[in-house]
Length: 188
Image (cartoon, rainbow, N blue to C red; front, side):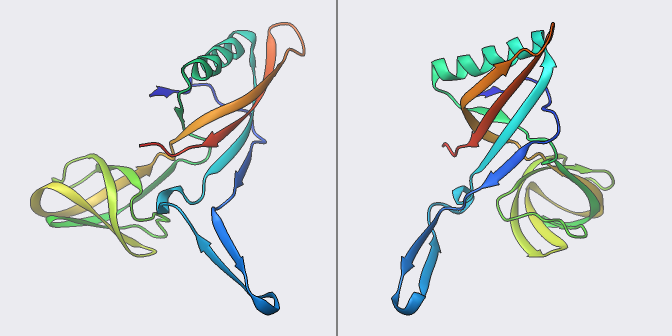
């Protein structure tokens, strides 16, 4: 899968959410609301982005988006400000690694990159196995060990997106503005 070029949008982007909810209206104004779909795909995001860049960079963006239309493929993109990095402590017993970080904001199934700064656990990409509370979560290691120390985790916020349309404006020589919407999609 292709990754969007390393060109950052300008500030002022808009992020929209539209959770997938089914509503059944009952008598006297009551209603029953239920999320539907798989848990990780119930709240797709749409980012309205503006790239105020050089003409050369705008050509790179436009060529990338045109190629995605031609091959009908999605691409990976990390929206600005969606990356989360926090430091805390951990303890490993067997293959279970328990990490304590104040207000970690993670959910079960989130993919994170962990750097174990002390101790002997293996750095790498992990999936959150369980969330105990707002300060504690667990991941599963590939090998058994008993140790503890400090760690830093990063949730990249990278998702899979498609771009249905975009506009390109050339306000003056060697500058261009591209406005586009990236819609999050969920694929196997």
